[in-house]
Image (tube, rainbow, N blue to C red; front, side, top):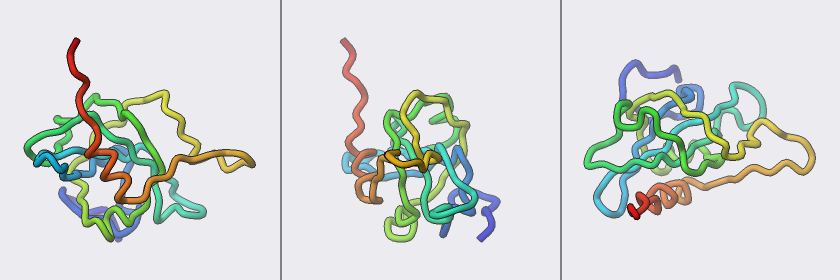
Length: 137
């Protein structure tokens, strides 16, 4: 499946994803949260079914747009599968540049002893739902 020309869309594989894609996640508080596609492989094992996504520190009354999340840095990230779309039915609603982070990303390190944080689709949704803005001091 080629990348759709308009947002929102529900990808079937990572072929239609791009780094920077923003995935809208409904929260239990009635607001919306977002995951950000921060890394993709274009070939090799798992390249069509997994990607690195991060929780964006954003919540709002509407699905996230590029201006909503522009300049935000993910607060945590992990390997996520396309079950997020197939089973969860979540949509890509925008694309915004990824802000560099110091969070570990061993997605491309496949050496002996390398570790990759992995979230199932429900865990990824739970991470978005669990994010809360820090209370001002």
